[in-house]
Length: 425
Image (tube, rainbow, N blue to C red; front, side, top):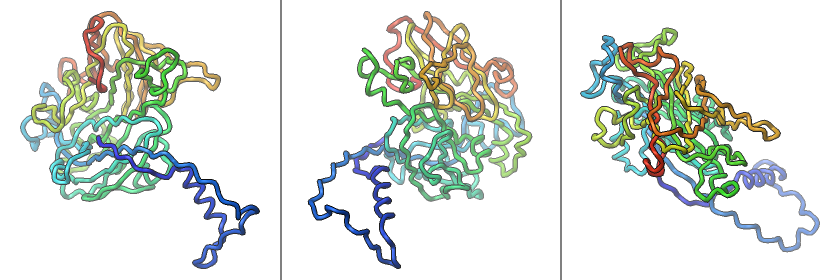
């Protein structure tokens, strides 16, 4: 990611300027200023200089590509594996890629290399953000002229232009770019997805996680040292954590992906998922480490780079950010670990009087379009399961053995794992 420093007008100064214009009289093409106020001849005080704001700039592209569901899944011909898939892959997808810092030639070369799930976007509260979205088109379906958008699910935008709902704003046509601007005011766990033909594009893989870090990180509570991490501006340190892991829960219907690749139409009322995914992967692929989507060394999971394996040391506080952009409800269960739900849908669970309404449980319900922030204190060393308690979602394509939405929590003795340098690592 690259940062660019540039002075920018604040929303307050914009509104004040608009109010000044509104106070003038407009006659034809002339603007007549109001009569000067008493004392207008006195020298005006110099306006206070506004501090320069830093704008975080990112560049995402939308395109199509191929992913790999577990090879152990039984064949479901003709839908799975897709006969058009290149070696090592078996499922057609749409997706986003992060191309920040790439040259135009390098960006163009990402066409046909969709990533699922999309890159996790992490920002700071009150940070200015510009995201350029480029539509590279679909390699396998040049007959489709689908636009793409960025919709921050559950996020309040200042104006509809940046909301990503094409009926109310804009969609990016093939070969074009659009700059989105955001200034997040509320910390929390959110999601983003394409809202163009949203039922299809979300199912095809254009989904990702979005985290907003709180101001409290720069002003630690009590005796907490600088560098302490919190999930929210809790005021009491109750959302402090040592490590964080994000899980985007979705489903994949092989028949729909096959039909998109083979120029056929899906009847979405027949929705019948074949795979249940965490971060675009099904167990046991969920345990593989993070990968680099720009490196072929990642093998069959090159375009599914986000791991779901949880590693921590005994006694550490671990934050689990759970989001659901599928069409089914999922209940995440951790065997022998007590979890505390501190926030739902990006909102801290506190009453108006400041009373914490946190929920202690071993199972967390996450409905479609919802998010949950969960904290647990790591127990003694050992290996624990984190999985969807609906057992019918724990298979791959109806085959035998475990699959689907499941991962492991590996707890080591204190000092086993070094300090976390990035999420899900």
